[in-house]
Image (tube, rainbow, N blue to C red):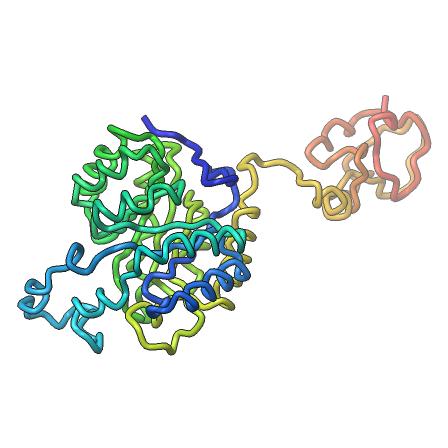
Length: 357
């Protein structure tokens, strides 16, 4: 089984809670702790609930030999100015930064996140966080899924470039040790293609909801516009992660497709608007409709003067706006026909039940 509500510091994550936003710094610190601090501050100012880093050692996440002999130019990495291995070396952050980053997050009142990509990194960050984020690329590495799950902290699992079989296998591995899981739809494509949103496949969230009813769901997204996030709210996602930068024109592997502060603020605003627009799901007369109900709906009114004792026919009656609360509504018009008027009724009066005998 799994928990249907999760807690990250003071925030509760559940289907009935506001969206939760994670700003993924990724490699956008550009090797500078000061830039990391700046991005933490900007993320908070932009409305993020958490800021996420990535802890890895290049030699433990990529094979230098493997990428040098891949013979493929079809991925986003083919456009990098340096080799894949060198880029990962540059993007990795020193473990000596961790405490400073955590302290800066606390000072800024934003939650610290990270994705650790090897066993040593998992252990290193354990004392500093309440939640582990597992990137899509590790969804098939069951050993590290199990290792993280056994830490008994909340786990966020991204599912990009994975089949449903991959998802079920990974979810089963984690849940066998830990019920605190958020499952995130993801499309693992780091390009800036204008049609990238068409591959987001947000309806997968429906499948996740069917397979895992009540599980906390999210979206780890690499598109720049807010449409995917806003749309996924109606499909049950409540946890959202996007890359974050202060400048899309900077050099680096993650800047081009990241969300900048102004766009992030817009995304948060639109997402919260979408969340509150969902309502309860029960059709009722809303508080802000009460006056409109009176002036927009019709009631039964006297078409002309009617004398006391006169037999009422359909010709005596009009169906017109407005409709006072106690007036007879058009669906009950047959209750009047053939009845005697209990009093004199003036033309234009709204019929009440007390007007007939």
